[in-house]
Image (tube, rainbow, N blue to C red; front, top):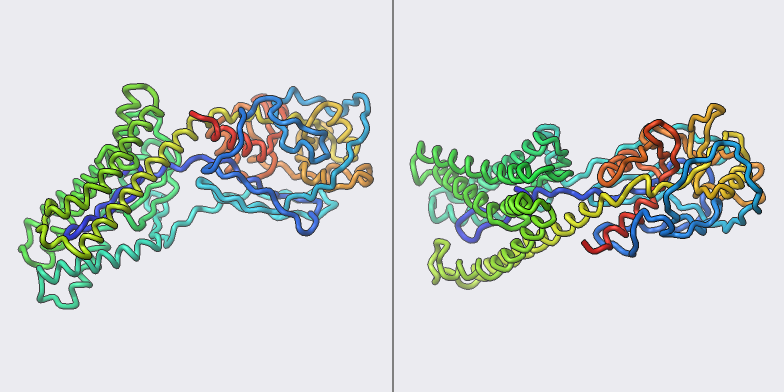
Length: 524
C-alpha cells in the first residue's frame, strides 16, 4: 500500500490492513566525532541534535550572514555559514592580526544522533599528538524493526513485537467463530486459528512485496518491510519521479490483494464447504478482499490516497497540491471511520444482527474505530509534513553552506595556521602536501581545545582527520543528494571540491543541520 497502517475488521471478518508505504524523509546527517586528537574535559555536555519533526528557529538557510562568525580558533562563530570565495593559496601572508583569545570551550564528546531516516554512531576520539590514523568510513547501522525473517529481493523483512499481540487476538477471535462453525474441533480450533493468523499476514507480506518490487523496478531504494500490529509497512526512501509511477507504485498492493482473494476463491471451489480447509480459504478470501477495498479508499496514508495524490499531481503539475488534497481527504476519512464504523456494526449492516451488537462488542467496535481513525489522521498529517520537507530540501546547497578554507602544510604551527585563516576571513583549515593535494581536515572542535599558549608548538597535523573518499563532496550537490552523500559517511566536516578537483571549502555537518531546521520552520 502507499502510506498507512493496517486495521482489523469487526466481528466475523479477519483484520483488514491499512498499509503504509512509508517514504522516509531524508534527514540531516548526524554529526559524528571521528578523530579527536584533543581529549575533552570531563563533564562535557554535547549539544542536542535538532529533530526534523520538531523544527525550531527562523531564517533562510544558506544565506550569507545568517550567523556572524567569530575568528577561527574561538567558539564565538562555530555556527557561521555563508558562501566562501576561492580558497586562498597556501602560504599567503596578509597583515598579521593579533592571535585570537581562546574561550577554552570544552570539545563536544561523542554523541549518537538518531533520526527517522538514519541512525548512526560516531567514531571514538583519537589520542593527542599524532596525525590520526586513517579510518575507513562507517556505514550507518541498518534499521531494525523486530525479528528478521529474511531478505527477499535484498530487502530485510522484520516482524515487530506488536505482531505477536495481534496474532493472539486473531487466534482468539477466529477461534470463537470456529466454535460455532466447526464445534467438533474442540481446543484444536485455536491451532487452526493460529494458522489463519500466520496465513493472513503472509498475504499482507505479499501485498508489501508488490510495493517493494515496483519500487525496485523504478530504482527507488527500499530500506525494509515491517509486519506490525495493523499490517505492514514498506519503507521506500525516495519519492516516485512522475505521477504515473506514483500511481502504479500505490496500486500494485491492492491489486495483489485482489488477486490473492481470487486465488483463495478458486481454491474454495475445489474443497467441501464446512471443512477446515473450506473455512480457512473462505476467511483468507474475505480478508484479502477487505484489505484491497480498505486500501483503495482515496485518502492518505492509504494506497487509494496515494493514487488520488498522483491524479491531482498529474492535473496540476504540483506534487504538493496532490499531497494536500489527498491528506485532507484522509482526515475526512478518519472522522468517517470514527463515527461510521460503530454505527454500521450497531445497525447490523456488517452481517450481524443489531440485538447481538451490545455490551463488549459495542465497546470493541468503538475502540477499533478510534484506533483506526487516529492512525489514518496521524498518517495524513505525517504525509503533509514529509511533503513540506521535500519541498524545502532543494534549499540545502553545498555551495551556499560551505565555509571558506585555507590550505596549510602538515608541519605548520597551529598559531600560524590560525593567523592565515583569520586574515583571509576563513573558517576552516585543510592540510595539504607540498604539491597542494588535500590530505586531512583540521577539526574546529579540536582547535578550540588547544590553549593559546600551546598553539605555536602544536602542528596542524596533530589535530587533523584524514580524508576518506566519502569525505569529499561536490560543491554542486544539493537537497536529497547532499543529505545522502553525508549520511553515507558520517563525519563532522567534509571537504567540498569543484568539478575540476580544486578545493572550494569545508562543509560542517552542524551547519547543514541548522539550515535543515530553518528550512523546515519556514511555511510552505
